[in-house]
Amino acid sequence: MRDFLPEDVRRREYVIGIIKRVYERYGFEPLETPAVENLDTLLGKYGDEGNQLIFKILKRGEHEKTGEADLALRYDLTVPLARVVAQHQAKLPRLFKRYQIQPVWRADRPARGRFREFFQCDVDSLGSTSPVVEAELCAAVADALTGLGFSDFVIRMNHRDVLAGLLSVSGVGPGLHGEAMVALDKFDKIGASGVGIELERRGIEEPARTALISLLDVGADLKVGPYADENLDRLAHALQVDPPGSAGVENMRAIVRLTAGTSAAGRIRIDPTLARGLSYYTGAIWEINVTDLAGSLGAGGRYDNLVGMFSGQDIPACGFSLGLERILVVMTERGMFPPTLATSPADVMLATFDASAAADAMRVAGTLRAGGLRVLVYPDADKIGKQIKYADGRGIPFVALLGDDEIKAGTVTVKNLAAQTQQTYPQAAAAAAIREALTPRG
Image (cartoon, rainbow, N blue to C red):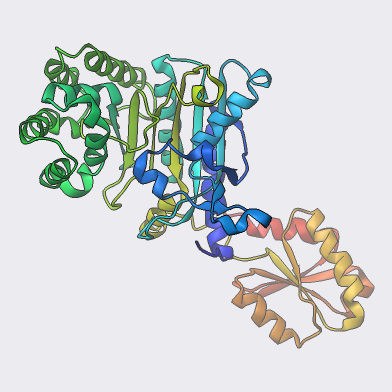
């Protein structure tokens, strides 16, 4: 968990602003939920490993000594969304499209791009089973990343029915599917040999382990190159004796075809090793990767049964989540932030020669702010050289000087620190002049 200094906050707000505007262009509406949920709401939704990462909150007051927990910090934004839809279903439209940008907490081991408190930028659609939903989500996150300046990201896609089919035809019993998926979820980190060891540790017999690794190799070349029907055909052939798996392949085929005219076109790679450890996924699943980050920039999938856990009535749902912290790590290391991104607290600093002029300084500052400028008033009547040095050190490009002559004449002298020039303007005209000087020349 970290502190964010002003430069950090500006960068975060820049990224959030772009993501938010993209989500809204797709018709998604904002939603916020509390930082704290009932512990029962969260337990059992993320698999055994996820349960261990939940930040539990001990009971309070007279129940504190029991050492029991009844609340927990929000682990993700998807389960709270399902609770909200179940609780407020009568107030929400049949097709509900929402975005949510808030922090979540996980008792995880910190690493590069991995923190215990971090923001997720979620976008979800509830109420339809159409593959148009998945295609539009892929397009929305692709638009967001493209808008941020990413050009090398890949959307890895798999399907839970395809994964279950591969496990079944390999000879992995239904009771061990969950254990096998946890192992497969580590494929990109530990490779085929590591997954084989993990499968053995989780009770998968050798013939099934060998068959499964072999079937995953069927799709090894599906992770590179542009999309081609014959690639999915090969995967469908491996699953021809498993109807749900075959249907999952066709669902992925439909999703990819629907993205053909969007910014996600050519970015989707079918990856049969992708498992996604969260237990609530029921259909297509995704992760977004770039070459210089061990881990994903975002992930998501379809979860048609999650709302029903709270309401007793299943509502089809699908979502995608971008990880703000990892996006910021990569953008910072690559130098992707625009040079025009504000790095100073103000456009102009108002300096005064004498404490008796403070009221005039406040009035002129108000005029400049009304003219659309960010204005910092230097509060002390220090030597002008010291005030100018402060402004220069903070990266403030202009200093407005207000001495006795300017006060009597109703003017203000504006000093351009970069050009080392200054000019006197009527106080009412100073804001327009500074704004013009701040505007980059084309």
